[in-house]
Length: 505
Image (cartoon, rainbow, N blue to C red; front, side, top):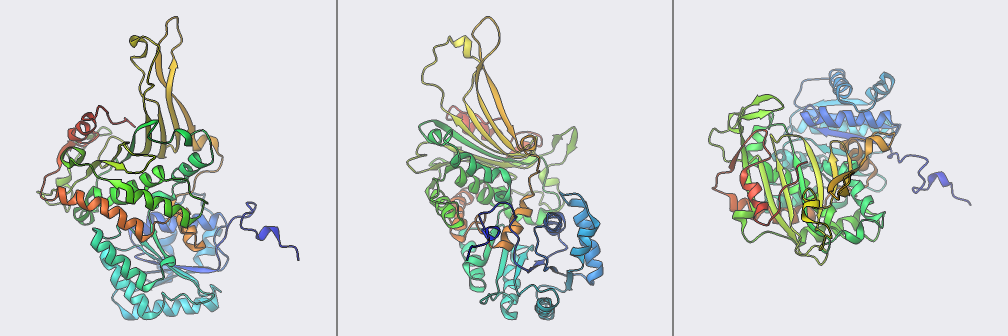
């Protein structure tokens, strides 16, 4: 019998569509669900990537019925959707939207939710498949997970899958992350747990792998023989918004450094996987994370800061301690920068500079490989005064793309060499716009594709890097910096100590 070629997963003519299933969101009335998850569900439906037999269930502490919830979901999706709004798409989706009121410690609410899932097997033909998204504070994870275990909702059986999506942060330190991982793994099997880091869903992050391993141009020079240093920056121009309660307990290092930036470092420094599969990519990333070394002099090479009042985009903004809900004597950092090493043959001796901060001049995330200068220049010193290091910059957001910076002669009668840039922009090269990170990641969860999701070993390896930093910073005050600046002076001095300086994104 000749197999149907359209059923071959390698065939690109038809998109991957999940099996019939339900998506259950705990905390569905929160910011994350309204701004990211509900729009992502609509966008997937609009692109024809959801199965015909699909249901969306929400549980939250609201005295609503399906009609009121469907209206909130519609407004959230319409306001934040990436793709054009089509009423007929939403009407089809709304017919499968259900809401269960109740708190997370309410046994009756979870019994009702379990019953609703069972009913949907007959009414909507979801086949018993369900993904559970924990869009809730980490402190509530144990309560919800134990309720799911009690009601049997977490049990995968032959022919029926159950998966759970866990939002960051994955614990507060190594010990708490191990406790959380043990709890999650006691309720769900390891392959059914999806720890979400939305940065890994961004197209440009995935393009980093294509850039390196689909070309012969870059990989031969992607090493310590040619690279002087690597700078990974995640800058935000906003403050903490209404997240004071979360941020006061967390800070910039736990919020961003532990997950987003260390994952970007792992993808930058990893070796080529033997195949493009979830297991092989995670294996190579884990090798990098376990090879990360901290500097001996943390006083010089680990800096944290806190923004003070200043000017940003022509407007006066308040300092962190003036934000609603923040302690007037708070020592929580809103900026963190550190110099790390990767103790492998490829990267030995190359410093990796990571920095993240709020109330910086602009919103940007980028990975910059700064190459060594040529060992000899046959030009006069005056000819190359404005020539810097060659750089390869992967811009994750915004203006997603890649920039190559190199020296070129300035037109004229004299030899003058100056830096120029060669740019590749996603928005100009491709007619199809990039999907939102949550759009891609939700689809992967429903498909069971764990390529872009870190496993617990990666989380624990990341905490092993962050915990010594937090211990060193404990009891110290962060360096102040004005809102609208690129961080505290100590961060500039950190690079200057080794004859380098931060890139200006």
